[in-house]
Image (cartoon, rainbow over all chains, first blue to last red; front, side, top):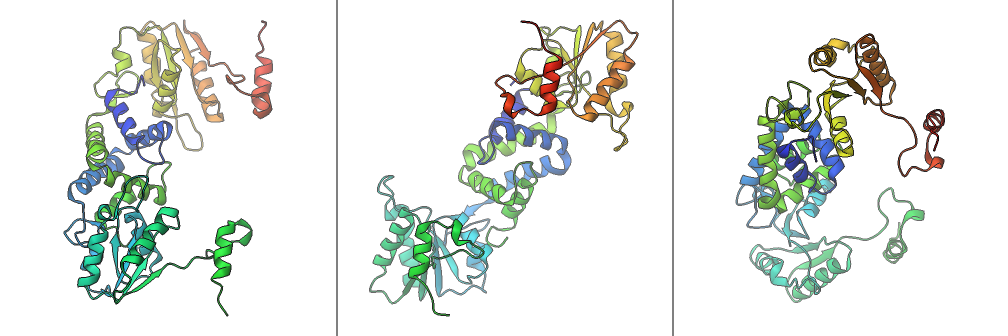
Length: 199
Length: 199
């Protein structure tokens, strides 16, 4: 684009590659950055460079952090008997925001997919099996997305764990807290009905 | 937020201060950056740091660039007889995207505002007057926003230029290209009718 200068345009183009930003909103974001150079632009550039240099996957669970073991795997307050299996780091963060789980995680890094040729060894599933054997794990909670690939992966892991001395559970399905029946899809209502509880 | 680590969380917080991004989308953007560390995150951090260091306002027109004079003020292809007055750099870029104007610009850096106590000397208006006197300018195009403050500013500048040997014009108001009458506000339709042209 004329007028902006080459390096400003290059910055806009890079910003536009972020999810949720297009060319227009990237331009707006860069103008905002230029107005707040000291307060926002320099700290953001520095923070981004530092995180890019220092961040690494946890060798135990696959969560991201700045040390070999992530904060959750290091914490002595977390129980070691329960492992919550999630697809990716975003799901781990979502579980942590929920605040209900006090065990540790295992990030698969995706789901099994015949179409994309993703097999168990691409997904840290062998490492999960090793952890379950070594750590004295009593329960594996499969917190995978309720998609076809997510559920396929959950079934595969449950199959692999059959015969081992470990409880395998999955997240309950039903009506979301605050959800209105009228706005829910039929599948969710059906699942909630089948899993109904006596009160 | 637990789970993300302190520096990653700090990065998310900074990203969330960009216009158009909230806490959720900032998290998504940072996860995307972490996945594309070499391709996107490092280049973006570097580009941002460079632009923050090098960018400066053009001493002539107020556009941003990396040298004393911006690319437009340096270009010998731009006519010097016409100055297009805009509120801010975003408006200058918008005019450049239009591609119809071949003269030079003057960025006011805002509009006159009694409420916010913004006067002419806060807006580079004295500098505009100097440029008009010095550069042999024949036409001043007031491309200010069609807001109350924008139009107040336009009238003020037009008043100041009365008696000087310079034509003062403003952008035409009317139906946008591709615009449907049914979706236009009444003010625009009224302005378009008053400014009707014989065909």
